[in-house]
Image (cartoon, rainbow, N blue to C red):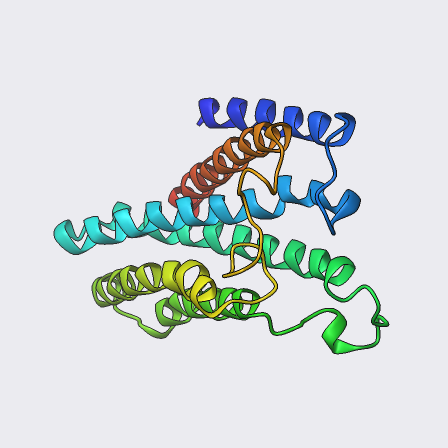
Amino acid sequence: MRIAAVIATVSITTALLLGFLLPLPKIAGLGWTDRNIFFHVPMWFSMYVLMGISFFWSASHLLREEPVSDLKAREAAKAAIFFGLLGLMTGILWSRVTWAEALPDTDFQAWWGWDPKQTFALIAILMYGAYFVLRMSVRSDRLRGRLAATYNIVATVLVLPLTFFLPRYIGGLHPGAEGTPAFRTEDISILHRIVFYISAIGFIALGIWLWQLRYKIARLTDH
């Protein structure tokens, strides 16, 4: 846990300093908002990693039915949802000042443009969040663990096509969709990439650290 804490602290602090102090080349159409790339995208990366951890422990629980596996899967899922919501909110703010700059704040379209990737991301988070509703609806510990683990595995498998493959196929305004720039060499500078990967490592470590803390607290409070 201490290793994750140290990596998160050093990496995120370094990314913050470099991201706001370095004279980074401008990305067309983004201006100063390009700095959000060091926060918005790493938050999603952290979510994917935490979902992978939750998937692993759910599969382990189905094989062994150990309460500790179910507990680890549950807490990893909570941390994943947290970073997913942060990623969604930073994306909404980013789209507000890029895609909908000309619209007034009172216009709903200024905050939510129904871009395919944005919409599929919301669907994925809601679908993944239903895992907790399922847990609360079952009283038997054994049945709850098995049903939750099965649902968690299915939900995790569906998140990737919803947030990555379908938006690329359908297209849209979001970077990474068909016909829009993302992380191609001509779209983003080497300096951007360096700071981005430092930040990604930091946020992934932060997510793992948060999961480990939540798991330790859950072990004390669930018994």
